[in-house]
Image 1 (cartoon, rainbow, N blue to C red):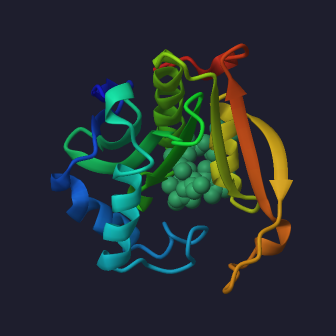
Image 2 (image 1 turned 180 degrees about the vertical axis):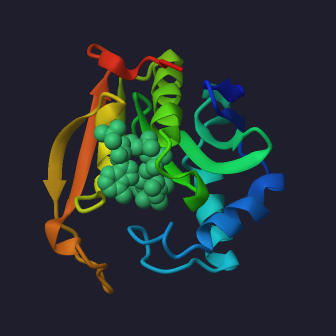
Length: 185
Ligand SMILES: CC(C)(COP(=O)(O)OP(=O)(O)OC[C@H]1O[C@@H](n2cnc3c(N)ncnc32)[C@H](O)[C@@H]1OP(=O)(O)O)[C@@H](O)C(=O)NCCC(=O)NCCS
């Protein structure tokens, strides 16, 4: 079971059907999707995305998957400590915040609690994350949460986004070196 999680300002609850309209609304903002698909996502694209996230990228039994965050009553976005079917020792950190919530430390707060949660799951030794090299905000969140840049690679896309030429970057944190990943509120 995925537990509800908290930070000083966020209440994080496991993603459920009732949250899909909020996720469709989040993906409808082209600025939110700038480094993901470079435009607003359609509702259909968002349903497909969440089938994948709530299916093969979640493991309810181990408490791994996706959470939606609320600041008071307001929807702030989603965070993940997701699962990899091919590697049960690994979890994935991710997040996507509504534009109204940017620039106030919320992504980092949520990321820290996701890392702490992932490492509380028996058998998880490593948390990984990736983003476009040019997504400075996301990289900064990963660094502030205590993760280390471990790889840069290039992918061939049919319709590359601006900045693709600088590649993708991978970050990780291992259980033996949890560093400042513990929640600090
Ligand atoms: C990227 C994103 C998660 C940042 O969220 P946020 O809540 O604004 O981040 P925080 O307030 O926790 O900021 C963490 C650090 O990143 C920096 N930062 C945040 N956005 C930034 C940006 N666009 N450019 C440069 N730095 C940025 C902050 O200044 C802060 O660093 P500092 O403490 O040294 O000043 C948010 O803008 C977002 O959800 N974007 C759309 C989706 C996305 O790109 N998700 C990641 C895909 S992998």
